[in-house]
Image (cartoon, rainbow, N blue to C red; front, side, top):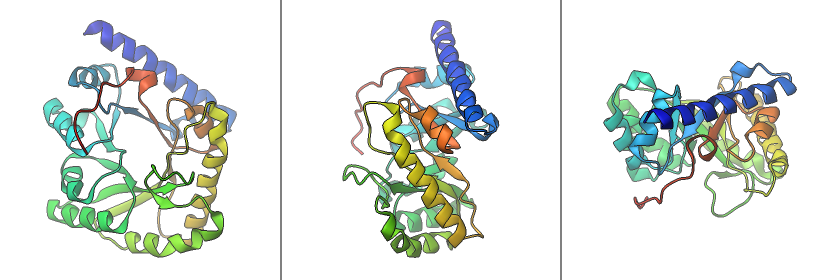
Length: 246
């Protein structure tokens, strides 16, 4: 286990350094960017080694798989658990009961269920609103690839901001996967533009968080304003096959 911990620690620290360098290039405070280490489809051994290596935020894509890991690890104060994948409405309660933060709120029905279960649990769930800026049918999120139609998104956003047990913190997106990191830049820039529109339309809401950037393009994401980057393979290695049907 010690070799695994040291290996993950080395890659984690190296990634943090690259994030800091990208932030400095953009004239940003490196401390304004948080690294979410993605452990979806990874065994519990990898999760435990990551925590021992100093990782403080772990991201999971599948509600039930993530909940099982959270319960197995215990000691909730040691790490923050972020839900970063698409969540079916029927699994909203699992998210509320287990996760500290949700990146991937992508619809009104899900928002309503998260709000209801959060009220039952006596908590307020921090969330990001997910937008699809690439137009890919395989990606979740409100349709935001056409800037001329952004006004059509405002009604749903307004409704969610009224839910008492959800705390909207910002935006999340997963651009199309390109061959080189630079191909992601226009999509990140579009996200920043959408963020500015929402900030102006809803000045009472904190839209300051931007979750964008993965192992391939996180440095570009940081240069463009990401405050949360989601990195798995570059730190914990390739994923194992996913057995749970979500």
